[in-house]
Image (cartoon, rainbow, N blue to C red; front, side, top):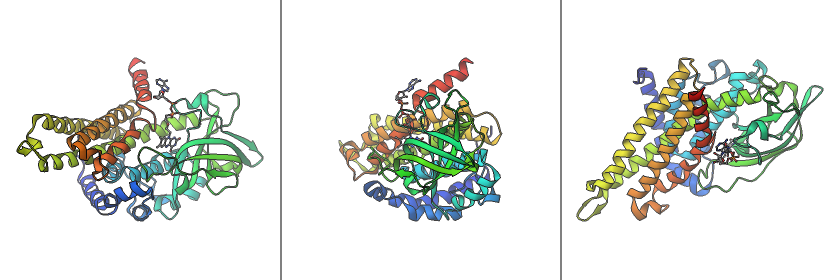
Length: 381
Ligand SMILES: Cc1cc2nc3c(=O)[nH]c(=O)nc-3n(C[C@H](O)[C@H](O)[C@H](O)COP(=O)(O)OP(=O)(O)OC[C@H]3O[C@@H](n4cnc5c(N)ncnc54)[C@H](O)[C@@H]3O)c2cc1C
């Protein structure tokens, strides 16, 4: 692989970086403190293509290559974890299955509004109170076919974007017999009768990324709202998560880069024992480790994106990139707080928020343990 970005990708990074530096990053603290979603910036992202990163141009999207889409999420992560998670979930988790598996009718009905920012965002509801890592065995939400409709019943947990979304792709059990062909994806508009979105969860971080429990009480949608094939929901979910994991790796990388930059600046400014703390070897080592690990994580994340652009299998590379980049990000943010001393523990300094925000990344879209399980299966097979 040629690890250099193309001139177009470099130009795109510069463009997104400037946008994030002006529109997203200045509001990151406000977003965290108030839990107000940054609609002002997100609405501006539609015309820039950031809400339809991989959506075909024919449906109003930017139809970007995977490396460019990864650049966009990394830069958003650098600016604000909350906003980046919302945009990443919208693109990868909600629009991804429609782009990849949806019928022409569903694409025409939903993609143009969602990809251009004319509508709100989208979300994907897999997790339930009793099912996270084990979706195949645990999903209880059902969709039953009645004439020309699906009737959806059940409860989902931790649905990112639910209160700021027009639609939810819901993982439902369509065959009560169970097994690997018993789940399907059904697209449910958030304004459908019987959909209840609970108040936002009170979380450790990512305060500006609303996460909700959602319940479905005899919700009726058209038969055509089946996304992809009936009975292929598990396989479609796994494929969606393969792509989503590159995105979460990129998001974590962006947060790590921001925390590293903050630590570097602070190390130059803060003086102890008559010299800047950057002159103490213990601090230098934390910075050196951060720079090294970020570099390694970046190579892994973009390697997975490159494989995707080549049309090659990505499951193992995406899991490795997600596992490594998210754990690196946690270490880098932890040490960025350490470099700041007591101030790092204060809400006055942004590394405190970054540490809280990045904590999710080793959990969402498959925990680190599940990534190790996926990688082990591949290397042992
Ligand atoms: C802020 C936030 C946003 C989220 N957004 C979404 C979203 O938009 N859509 C959605 O569907 N979900 C979302 N989730 C849910 C998230 O994907 C799940 O929390 C995650 O997959 C873990 O599932 P769980 O919480 O049920 O943990 P569990 O599956 O109960 O796992 C608990 C612990 O056991 C470990 N474990 C489980 N099974 C194994 C195993 N076989 N081997 C080794 N260890 C194992 C796990 O790694 C973990 O440490 C979100 C969660 C959060 C916190």
